[in-house]
Length: 337
Ligand code: NAD
Image 1 (tube, rainbow, N blue to C red):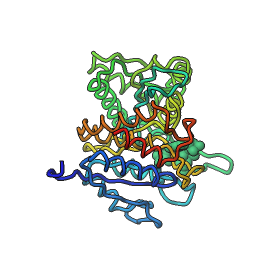
Image 2: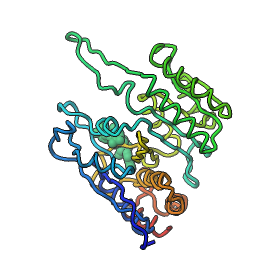
Image 3: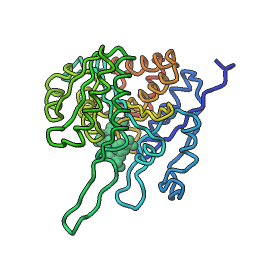
Image 4: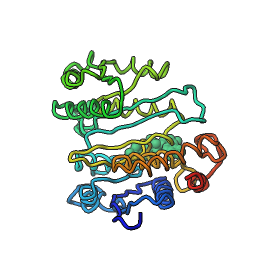
């Protein structure tokens, strides 16, 4: 509707394949008449002293002001005396939960046809607290921080998500038999929240057993909630069940209702700049952003076009066994709108 004012959303094209797949999103949104005006922000080439990272203060302000955004993958240069870009975003915007839906795509055959999982990852602490140091030569130490506040917050989000999305069960994934204090506190918080949701089944599963069960029969799970590192690993495992990292979206939920959607995958330097990347994961992430904005008609239309294109099988990117370029696959989606 040209009469209504467009909604402003922040877009970080990101690194590696990021700009190529962000271009797909922009094209598909344009063709589907999505009333969104992108505010594009690039990762800077020097450190902004206000953020101590290559992300500018203005780009963070843009997300805070708009409340919604989409980010491409950002490469993490190793050990150069600045904060990781992704960690900066998570900390500065308080992105406390990362929601990763993962479902079988009709017409794209993998070992399972019935995958329908939601991984909810605690996003601010745990093994990602950035507290590593050398004790003496040859001995290093890394601190895993678990707080009651962050654990309750992510557990609350998981149960709220389950209830509002018609899900039946929440499984807390842990290793509390070994990490007794940290994962023990995480579980205690999950139990407390579970009591407030008697209509949702609650269970606790040890992470190693969870991996085995997921690979053997993914239908054993529904919504999974877990500390940071476990969420990182389990969601890649889930992606593998349905066809790989080119397919799986995510959405970061922040305090004050911020939603910053992003693909699960990284910058894929091995295929960057070659027009080979699968834009599906970023496109489906953009769809979660539309759902957050309650633009369900547009979300449905774009999601159906993506799934229809993959299911038809004429145009698929190399990661799905096809030979289409990013741009030909994108055009096929546009033709399906
Ligand atoms: P990666 O996800 O970039 O790549 C892993 C494999 O999957 C590669 O073979 C890649 O070609 C393939 N792949 C990923 N996305 C694809 C797509 N859309 N289409 C087709 N194939 C795809 O993981 P990595 O190689 O471990 O990491 C590369 C960089 O990305 C690192 O700097 C890492 O820190 C960063 N990273 C960023 C994020 C993020 O921004 N959220 C997440 C993970 C990794």
